[in-house]
Length: 412
Ligand code: C6P
Image (cartoon, rainbow, N blue to C red; front, side, top):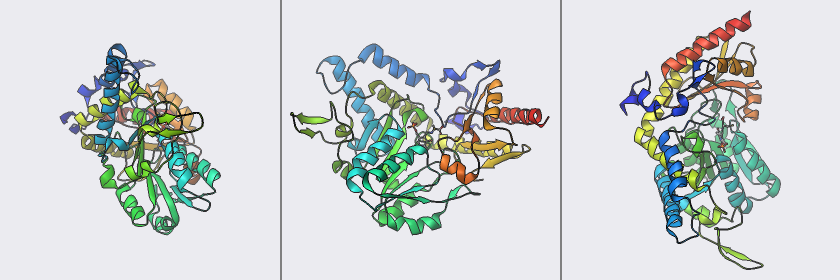
């Protein structure tokens, strides 16, 4: 899309995002908290509204017209999702509440039966809590042990030499595609390739990548991949777990309830085939329909274009912020995803975020659910600006200007 090629901005696309068109404390909103959640275009909002206004019904249960429409739309979104990540079949797509639930599902439904005492679950030091805690719980249940691929602190990159030693001992390797604090882009295809040669099962946390770059699970060669709709223009409360067919076939249900069973009697039940076996109860039908609209929206823009635009803006922001006095940047200097983490002098991250908010700028301060990584970096928190295709260079310039003002104010 030409608008994305224009590095000065994507003005016409911004009109799709009504939330961006408002003043905050008398200043135009500059929304730089996209890693937490992105804004939603009107096409997604309209798809959800249309469902509730015209087709609202439960799925898989009724034969009446509305239920048929809801089921067709829901299952159509599954086919669309398979296409979005190039899964071999829509039967490999499980709808969940988000990345967090997707990882918990894999940790329970796969982990409970495949891991035993002493087996090694390999993670990395840059994981979000959602890709740590479910594995800790699994380790407690099974007696498996956790190991971590170190992060090279000053570079913000995984220590791949250490991976060489750790991977052969592992049964499962779960790692993030893009770090939500450092902006590091991990070489997922290479990592999965190495794991596959050793017979190690892989899970990719694609929360920060699915809406920002093309994903092809067959080319990457992963076993599982998890992502959230709300970080890619879609509704909250919806996520995806991709799982390779053979793995899903061998897995136990995650939760029990309606819609996942084939038959129930008083003392035992049988299950449907995957993916329905893993979707107990009424799913988030409107959310899944909204996710479908979001995927269409992103593909109309072109994920290669989004990726290029994000990375250019991130590099521009990194270079601009590097010129601000007393500003400390984290993460790799090059080849970074669309976010920048930093600290400003000795000023508390929440003070900076609060003052930026007074200027209409939405940043995030805190540990970003990365407490182990924070320890490694030797800080309690960072300030994070995270971008999407609707952000512009003038917005980055304004951020830099406001940060300079905040620094001046605190300097005295
Ligand atoms: N990170 C952030 O501001 P959920 O909450 O399930 O949609 O996504 C969890 C998650 C998992 N992995 C990574 C890499 C993530 O970044 C996130 C969510 C948000 O960075 C909220 S802490």
